[in-house]
Every structure is written in C-alpha cells, then in structure tokens.
Image (tube, rainbow, N blue to C red):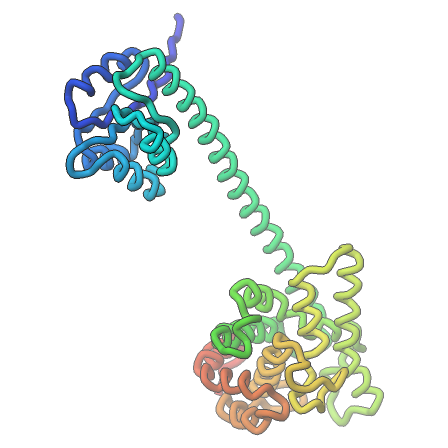
Length: 369
C-alpha cells in the first residue's frame, strides 16, 4: 500500500482595502499557497499575531485608518511578528515610497497592476530566504541552549570541586562544612547590600557577586597544608604555631597560582578566589597579615570575607572556646569598625544583621543564641 505524504502549503496573508484586489491576489496564489485576507490594518495585525502565523504578508500601502507603512512598523516592533517577510503591493511606484517601505523592514516592493509571474517568483524567493533564516535561527537557539546546558554542568562540577577542596581544608579545624555554607551566604548578602554603594558598585556587579559566592568557600584552603589538629589545639600557641597558621594565606594563594599555571590561563573566578584566600586576614588599619595591607589596598572581596569569617568564628563553638551569642558578636565587631574592618562593610553587615542571623540559623551546627 502506497503512503502519500503532502507538505502543508505556506500561508500568505494578503492585506488590501479593495475586495477586488484581494480576489485577484487569491486567484494568482490559491494553487500554491493557503490564502488569508484582511481588508484593514487592525485585522491584519491580529491575524499575523495568531499562533499559526502567516509565512509571508502582501501589504497594500494606501488604506484608510491605518496605512501599510504603519502596519509594517507595528509588525516589526512585535517580537512575535517581526520575522514575517512583508512585500508591499501598491500603485505608489516612485522611488521615495519604495525606499520608505524597505527602510521600515519590508523585504520587497511590487507595483500594481500585478504581474502574476513576477509576484509568484518574488514570493517563492522570499519564502526560501525565510526558510533559511528560520533554520539558522533555530540552530542558533539550539546551540545557545546547548551552551547554557554545558555551562551549567561545568559550573556544577566546578562548585562541587571547590566545596570538596574547601571541605578538605576544614578537616584541619574542628569546624564543619556548614562554616563554608554560612560564610558563602554572608559574603553574598553583604555584596548584595553594597552593590549600590558608591564605593563598591563599580565592582559588585551581579556577575562578580556570583563569582564571589562560588569562590568564598576556598578562603581557608591553605589550612589543608597545616599539621593535623593544629587549629583545634588547646592551650597557648607557640611562635612556630602562629607562624604556621599565618602561612595558610600564602599556601592557599600558591595553590591557586599553581592551578592557574596548570590551566594555562587566568580567570576572574580564580582571581577572586586568590584575593579572598590571600587577603581575608588583612585588617583595615594595616595590622593584619600576610602583607600588612591597609584600607582600600585590601581587595574588596577580602574585606567582605573578613567580616563574614570573623562573625562566624565568634558565634561558632570550638573545642577551646564557648561561642558568643549573635548580639555579643555584633557588639564585639562594632569595636573593630575602622580598625579590623572597612567601616562601610561593617555598617552594611550591621544593617542586615537580621539576615545574617537567619543565615547562621539556617546552616547552624547548633542553635544561635
């Protein structure tokens, strides 16, 4: 049994306020195309915006209420109809009107009285152009979706790797992976608060905030190189202990630089991570380490992390200390304004302290007092 398949005919919308003209157009096209007609611009716009949109529009210029030029303007202004090719059919055959129509986005201009062979040839050509354009647009959209999908996969793998490496560093301390989550969210909340601030807005774009959020868990990655149990040591540290702990910022920076060298390129993500790792122990007054940087010489990302890291350290119990309450921690940090912390960053922290406390409670190892 033979199976016959037929392709649907392309649909042509003919727009003309004179019924006789529509009859002529229909008689020329009916064997090859499905014909829809409209006698005014409003009706034409409604038909063009239907889900089953026409493949091409034949448009008269001289119509009452809304002329063909205005119809074309509106078609091209609507994302749903802007890609439908428009051919003007009109008795206005001077160069000025032809140029006007083409400038508005029409693909062609045919003069009346209509020549059937010429009209059929031009419709055929423009439908072929449209089919090619539609194919390329569909391919571009497919490729865009595929790029987004693969980017999401790469980002997820990158995030998993970051968290795994950071969690490894945390095993040198008696903190849990929740410390990573908390500080990550503190940094993001602070950055969102400060992104409209005149001192920080140039840096804290949405893209940068996303990178800071993802790189923040690496802040203590240098701890992975410390002797096991050192950070949980009870009793006083020796000078050698202090030096080893201070070295974690340099060790972390070196690890990221090694990653950059292996990768063969530098990325903004790794640069932010390196700034956070290397400088989050610097203090606003220059008394921090490893370089004794002060004020605006400290990277913004590190200033955010300094506030986040200190708060979490204060409200988190350790084997050698009792945790502060939220209010006690905030009061203690106020004393560090302009000394340990950038004043504006600390002010932002205080302004969103309820949000900070909510984050602390959401990812708490225990209840926050």
